[in-house]
Length: 250
View 1 (cartoon, rainbow, N blue to C red):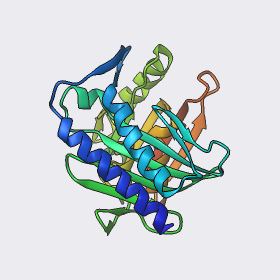
View 2: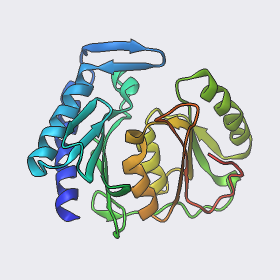
View 3: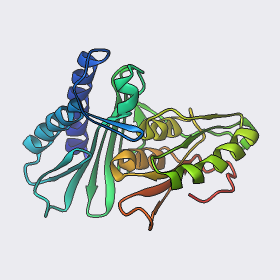
View 4: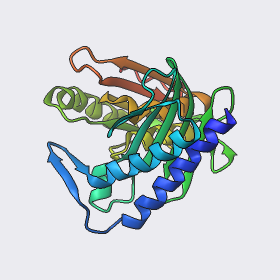
């Protein structure tokens, strides 16, 4: 997997440099949506990532938040979120990342998450230990919910917000702290690193979580994803260290 991982890291760093250059500057907005923003820079970042990956692997497919490219019949599919945390980025909140995963048929085999503002690069591949800036990482060893810090994400529909509010109230009363940080991929990277004990979200897209899944699993954690029947293409997720009884299904 080394060549795949090296390409993903190269693409993530290139996109990260682009995002750093434009951070805090006036940005072109493609659309303002309910609870979301689409930037021209999202498209530019994905095009940069796509160019690097397809130059290395021209027969592979690209599936990203900003569209598809490459050979869509390929068994090898790169799953890309060019800016995870776009709203944070637009408001000059330095908490966002680039997320790149490689799926072989139905299995995620490579994952990279890069926070360009902190220069933190998480990487994982099948059969190896998750790494942060070249050092092995592991999920938290905390076992009590009262000691835990959790992220409970909120998506963009009335249904999922209504479902998330009781979870937030429940965990806010029982956990050490709950956080809503605005980047699903970074939340998963933080679970893999032991910074967060769990991440729970009612409705996300594959590109939000693909790289984070392999990071959490190769760091010793548990990851459960359930497709939402009421929102095709959306997924409910519960990722954790596996040591705390959350008493909740995703």
